[in-house]
Image (spheres, helix red, strand yellow):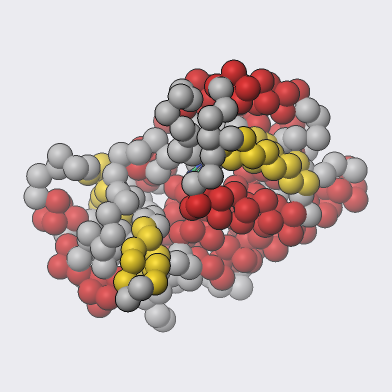
Length: 306
Ligand code: GUN
């Protein structure tokens, strides 16, 4: 088996299964899951992400509502919009694309989203639920990483995991999720000493630092699973290229399993956003979501140990 973890194919399968569930919901219960995405400003990368999220929501049969606000929008306007969407029965999930411009208090905005509609899983109530092992909304990127890891490795219990990066979006929730899987987890960051030696102890290495190619092959324990969350745009030979936080060339010689960039974690993040939107919709109407939704999507590609 190749050591490549093909997030693009796995995400496409997951989206298909989500699409089937959405279509059942529409036909049987006359409910169309609705995703509202808010973009403030004109950051080119954020524009691409938001467009992809909206397009893939529509392709899965969901209703997609897009709001684009000027970079200079006052915080009160954004909060008013969120309040309106919280009350809108056609909107089941709300996402405010981050980062936000400096006049806007990110924490205040996240807290304004109703926890039941917080499909990013950033609201303190959902963060608390994940931290305590309850049933909160799980942030999309760590959820996607965990699905890929479990699919490839099977049981994660007892494995040594190192998470590089301590962001609220990826590093911290990733560490919580791995802990719940009974991994021994270390969160490393810019002040961690002897990062390379620490990484070499990891059976599972998740890199989410936003530094192109930082993790080299000789940082990796032979056979380890490497999940590259980085999406860095670099200029090379007059064109822009996307690269991860892992130096794929050298790392893929050593790793037992590795996600590429692009085509690894990125597509899974959006598929998990759709999954969270479906789940949020079902919860709001007290309709059960099949427990085996992910295995239904991935069944014919059963887990094989690295
Ligand atoms: N910006 C980068 N990643 C994310 C994400 O997962 N959700 C939101 N809302 N903004 C982001």
